[in-house]
Amino acid sequence: MAEEEARLKAQENAKAVEERRKAQEERKMKERIALCVEGETRLEKERWLVQEQMQQVQEKHKMRMKAEKQKCLQEERCKRMEEQKQFLKGKLDEDMEVPQAIEKVLVFKDLSKVPLIPADKEMCEGKEETPVDVIRDEVKDDINPAILNKETLDLEYEEIEEEKSKLFQRKRKKLSRKTVAELQQKVNLKASSNIILVLHHWCFKDKQGIGKPAWKLHDCIKQIGIRKMEQALRERDDQKTMKAKMWKKV
Image (cartoon, rainbow, N blue to C red; front, side):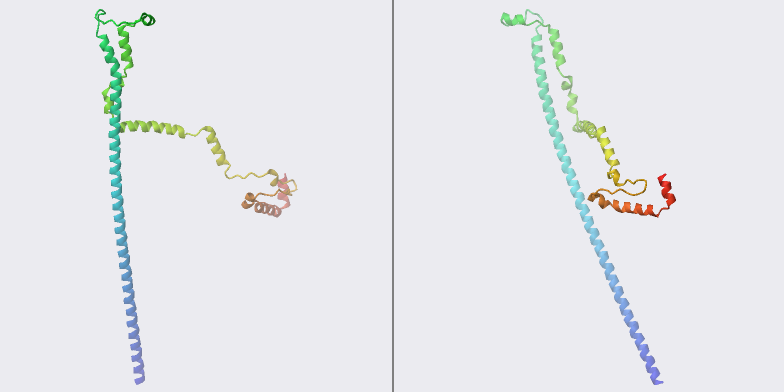
């Protein structure tokens, strides 16, 4: 009886020790899992923070580049407007010089009040007299009304750029169009992309089904495996019955 009690106690002690060991292992596993989860969450947070910082930096860079671009465009627009104004102003001055001089001459209506200018007889004989109205009409025709129009000065740079871009797009479309010869060449290339040119007698067979000896094939054709295909066709023909062969000859 004492031995059995001792044995039972020993078994109970062993079970208790095993249970304690299992509990410790489970606790350690839970701690490891908690540490892993905590590490993963920390890494995810750090990764998210890094991504957010990168996005902020990229947005700042984009905003800065956009502001610089707008500033450059505005400066260039102002510069071009000033150049255009100066050009038009110079053109106006050049075009207005001639009419002013002619108007000064045309002020004298009576021929008696016109001052006489001494000139050689030879120079006067070669020239014909032109009436004053004709001169005035010619001067008016020579003056460009678009230059005298002040509305051209109010044109914005963006409208001019849009008109230029439309013209450039049309020219680009015309230049990018392919000719009929180029299209035909492209069609021929697409049609012959999967074709290998082989001499006719290499695959020719006479009525008896005996293939003629072929020339030495190129390496590029050997890599495709045309020999294996030919051998497979011959084996398939050998397996056919005589009736099928005769039907093929007919």
